[in-house]
Image 1: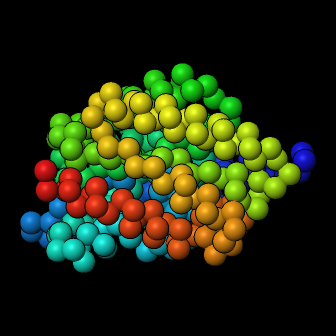
Image 2: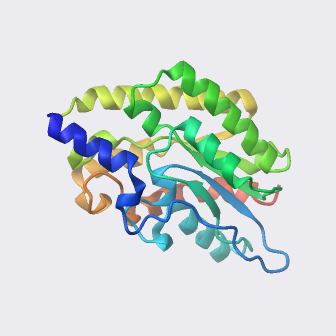
Amino acid sequence: MKWTISILILMMACAAESPMNNDQTPAPTLVPGQYRYLSLGDSYTIGERVTPEERWSVILSDLLRKNNINIANPEIIAKTGWTTAELMEGIKGRNPKGPYNLVSILIGVNNQYRGQSIERYREELHELLQQSIGFAGGNIERVFMLSTPDWGVTPFAKGTDQAKIATEIDAFNNAAKEECEKLGIVFIDITPLSRTARNDASLIADDGLHFSGKMYRQWAEFALPTAQNRVNK
């Protein structure tokens, strides 16, 4: 058990170990009239163990372009292992300049994993959501949040209390949804999709802990209607 936990800590907190994880992406070069997209998060946003093209927000941008929405690939501020507090520090260091036509956020798994309180998560997430609105030029309708997926269904979680992980993930997601509702931000629940990986190994990345590009495509397709309705607002 101690060995398994040590591996989990290493996998979730050390982005430098993955040759496919670039931590963050620079702002893309825009063509005239192209929409801007800012994607904030942790390992699930930067795409730990998948190629850049398989990141969910990159797939979403591609799907939007296929639906005749001229949007650039996302500017990503994310790193494996980040909590809400670390994402705030990452944003401060990067200092992105809005306004963006679309802003997404997916953060919380590492708060849950490290045993941080939901009260702290609420407070820090509320600040991040307000920042996101600011990045969207004050337009709440351009912002959306994805729920935290359930890492307890992955092979690396075997030997742990998977039911407890699921309960805690649900509690963090309930808090996130409530904070989004307070501000009028759309909350997209992709957690049920993540739980289908329990019986489908193709949805898990080769490290046995993170999700695959196939799973990320499902998230992007699920988020597409929301993004389509908001990018032009």
